[in-house]
Image (cartoon, rainbow, N blue to C red):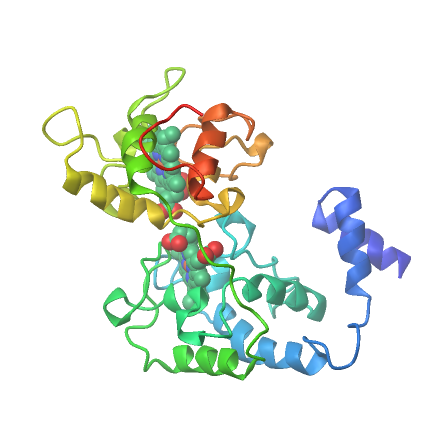
Length: 284
Ligand code: HEC
Ligand code: HEC
């Protein structure tokens, strides 16, 4: 077992303390036979849900790639699965950890509202915009049905997301858009690359030197997609331009504006994402 544990630690490439904690929990039996998830629960989850994540869809781009191609650590979102140990998929221990992550994306009290169901679903069928594309054109899709049924069969109180704070529009308009337009240290402004399409949350003002209501509203809708309300550490908006050494995303085809989360501007934006900063006053 020592040898196995050691190689696990090395592969995990995590801090030793964290790695050890993870390794230990891998070998623990679940507390109390009745508590979720039992080994049967994990098996059911593997067969029903992880098989969808692994499904080869014949491509490598939005709507065609398998979920797991994008949803491991590279994507730096909350929905981050373990890197499968073999081409056949995850070990039981890995599946248990994946299930912890999935628990944050579902709502057992209101299954249809689960992000896990809404993100891959077409927007005109009640889905949410998703960088990964549309996988289900309607709620009649058999995969959708399978996942919905799985969530419905979990105990009602098992996974209930905390209420999300409101992300204030006035603060976005007055303070966040200013960040986009004003580059630092000779970097390109966000507006240069984020003016159009799905990543167009930072358009340059169209006519005047201020954004019209319509421009600001559209940008606000687009940026909500890269925000996890209440959770700045897991919001792509605050991860992409943050230096990897400071906890930021591994890749961004644009500059790193903040060296670390201590940057006062990062803190200001984090306050907004937590729902704490509202109105049009930008100084703290
Ligand atoms: C081509 C890459 C790609 C693929 C394939 C992909 N996604 Fe995504 N997904 C993303 C990105 C990027 C985000 C974060 C931005 C966003 O929400 O659009 C995301 C976000 C999500 C979220 C929200 C995560 C959160 O923290 O709230 C869920 C849920 C999700 N995807 C589910 C899926 C499922 C299920 C599949 C497979 C059926 C899938 N995705 C396939 C790229 C992808
Ligand atoms: C030189 C061009 C460029 C600049 C400048 C730039 N970005 Fe990006 N950014 C990109 C590209 C291209 C992508 C998509 C590929 C990727 O994820 O790296 C991206 C992706 C992102 C994403 C993820 C979008 C999504 O839908 O998942 C966020 C958030 C982001 N950038 C924030 C910013 C912020 C904030 C700024 C300004 C501080 C900025 N970027 C500046 C090119 C740029």
